[in-house]
Length: 172
Image (cartoon, rainbow, N blue to C red; front, top):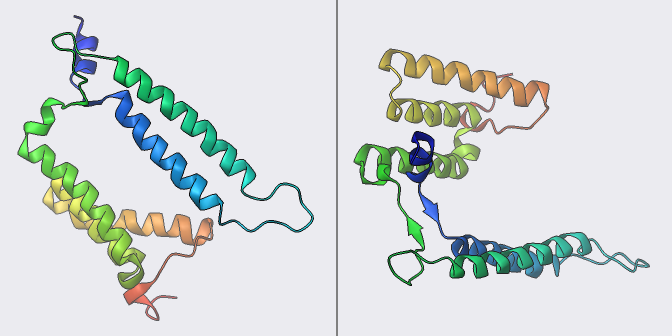
């Protein structure tokens, strides 16, 4: 086995049947959702036609993935191997970093409207910088500077309305 093959072999892998099942659930959710789209009077086709067609195509691909995944069997046994974990999953540090990455995204979603983009962004980046090993002296300045750069790019240049939250009335 070459070095590259060995590196690729160490990654976490999900069986195609698992991905197929997830995509099939997504396709069904899309099909259920597009049924609520209002029809356009006088039109033979409504706004649900294209998302519905894409969902049907996605469902067909999902079924094919499920069939392929179930057909794939391990060499040692005839059972389907649903998931193979990568070695990093046994490292507390790496699992914590993964959980924190998910956690800061949930934090952002839940609190960005109340706190505002700038405070939430600084906390978000500072937490990630801390867990991923940025030197302590650089965490707060980098988090603040990058948050302000991102805010300027989206708010001023791209005209994306970002929430001010706690800073409402203090800035601009």
